[in-house]
Image (cartoon, rainbow over all chains, first blue to last red; front, side, top):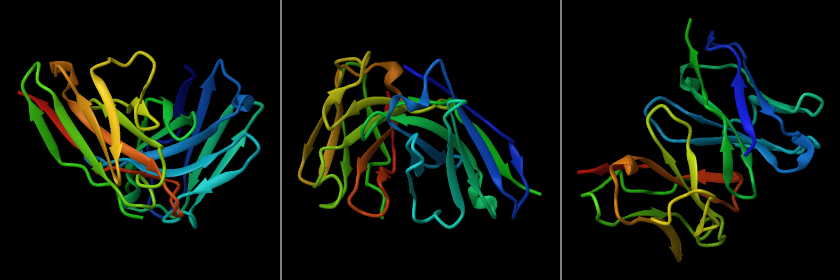
Length: 117
Length: 111
């Protein structure tokens, strides 16, 4: 299985932009598959944020569409998430994962992002 | 797009079987055989157990099985063990603008 690792700031100020990167280990992102971001607020359930293919084709959760950008860097086998105008409601553990085809078989360990001044 | 409905908690004694339901609509579970189930221990990432309604992921115990009838999917854990105590989530591909919808989550307690 591919190993995924999220990275980015653990603290973001309200109204600023949250930026996270997911790096694949020993695996080329161009091997196919969609690559996905999820989040999980503390004590709550999972939410799909969006998906990206190595070609750059994306699907976004409509509830976040106006604030999110997901991009891919094939040379580094990385994909990234930007979420703008964050509020306390965006505080969550953010996960990246591989979509093997309508299910998610490899996950990063997750990274907690807290929105606070 | 509403979340799929799961019972908040299910419990059982070691060795027993339990079933977790996941109820959706004709636009998700009822339309597609793309239901998957995940196990999540505290502080850990979700782990894929079942894909495409009833296919066990590699390395997953045969004690875990999935099924679907109409708009409701189910995960059955047989021979319940202490290590099965965790949160469980279902998810389904959907025909709506949200590509994937998750269940509300079920906490399994081994008595």
